[in-house]
Amino acid sequence: MKKVIYPGTFDPITYGHIDLIKKALNIFDNLIVAISDGKNKKYLFSAEEREFLIKKSLFSDLKFKKKNIKVVKFNTLTTDFCKKMKSNIILRGLRATSDFEYEFQLSGMNKKLNHKVETIFLMSDPQNQIISSNLVKEIADLRGNVKKFTTKSVLKHLKLKLND
Image (tube, rainbow, N blue to C red; front, side, top):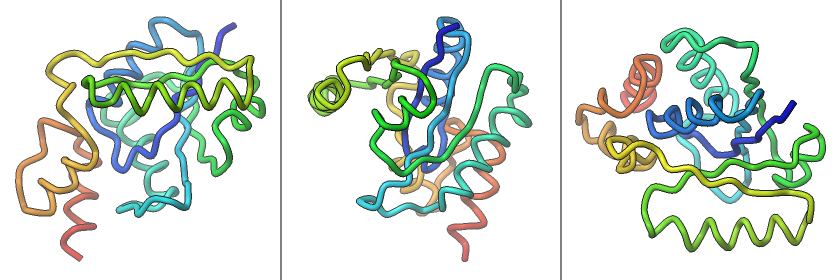
């Protein structure tokens, strides 16, 4: 039974992320959405809030079945997390050619850290390729409508967070 790790910050989760989750579930038996809580980034939502929003978005808003998806926080190297979760497959998304250089380098570094780890790249559907968490946060912060980019649970919490 093949299991894939989909690591990211998911700050917040978007329809681009969800598109990749759907595609991964068509390929793999099990998916672990791994929420990175690295120290080098400034987050709008805490790791706990991001975990809550992912679960709410996937299981309440979109009615995904829980049996094939696990949502987990981590703050280690992704390759160490893979070892802990007994998976040697990392899923990464590509939106545009601008993502490729960074993802190529990251994939190579992960391979050097653990030669058993393979990185699989998937692209979201064209309508979701423009979506990024950073742009969603920026648009929401400027009181723009982000309904087309994320779930109702995220919309609600963005509004609460940004109106504080």
